[in-house]
Amino acid sequence: MQEKVLAYLDEHKEEMFGLLSDLLKIDTQNYISYGNEEAGQQFFAEFCQKNGFQTDLYYPDSIPGFTEHEGYLAGRGTDRRPNVTAILPGKTGKQKITLAAHMDTMPVGSETDWSVPALGGVMKDNRIYGRGSSDDKFGIAASIFAAMAIRDSGVILDDDVYITSYCDEEMGGGNGALATCLKYPSDVYINLDGGGMQVLPYGIGGLSGAASLHKEETLSSCSSVFEGLTILVDEFEKFGKKRFKELGKSPIFAGTSIHDDAYRLLGVTCGSGGLDLNSAKISFTYYTLQEQSVIEAEVEELAQRISKKLAKKGLVFDGIQKVSRFFHPIYPDSVSQDAMLFKEKLETSYGKSVAIAGGCLSDLSVLHKYGNGVAFNTGLYKGFDEYGGPHQIDEYVDCDEFLAIAKALALYLLEKTYSKGE
Ligand SMILES: [Zn+2]
Image (cartoon, rainbow, N blue to C red):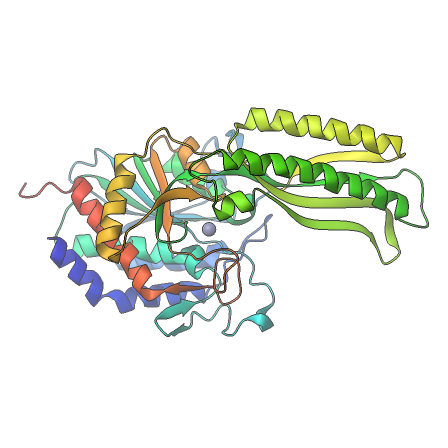
């Protein structure tokens, strides 16, 4: 049966690549308080329906109790940003397995820097280019084609499989992932939002934030505010060094790019060509493996120290604001059987060894905390600092890796939940 399912994927790979290309032509950029997912989700829902799947397009905020849930993040416009879940029903449906990927993308950025149209879905040189190709629309296409390969080969699995395309992942969203946990709770979540052809049962915690200060009186120069800004930058650098040290103690994250990026200063502003002279601001991201309450206590101490130092200079500290949600770290005591099984299947389809590793901030945090099941990430994206990587110009997927992941999903499902001969 394995051969038949794999042959199906080989025979239909051009259609799978075509689906990704079509998804890339639809603008689904995430602008934090709103996003353009709707057209993409409608297209995907129609695709699933046309191909015979029972399909549900639903808005997170319309799920009963959703906006009161502790994981809900207000101000994201998820009353108008739908999720789509297609269902592959099993014989018993005893267990539920979710294959998930997000429909929203980072903004395109400066289009003139791209060598191909950012929303063109261009296929060339065994690659498919476009914003959201590796992050994360390939996962939507790979999941639905894995399900079709199984069904059209005449296999009926034991368990139910949910193929979910969720909204609002970029920029620290998470409401789409939360919605799938609440509406389609599952025993296993494979979140196809990871990099390097790895299996990622570990996830770093942390958040993106900002901190600002101001001077009460009207100023003709921003030099006194700038002096305060240097205090702010220095204190956060010290906080960042602690994060670097902290991650250095983890065998999973030490020496990785996540360790290197344990603290990143992302922006510094003070005055603007003679305007806004009495305020200053920094923005940053930090990673941690500490529980939220522990790290937040440290951040609170940091805020008090900064506040005192600034007060001595006659400056007012406006505090530290969260820009994203807090991502809960995921650090299981042992790697789940499902993650190990998927690793084995990915090695088979990819023909190379596959590492078990830790991923950067993602909605694995939400799926793990609120999904009540086993959860891990996997995926094919390149480094965030590499040409063609996620969030970069010329973002692309390699077609062989794309196909290998679709095959691994199908092989995993066959071994996990197909009782032959019944
Ligand atoms: Zn992503």
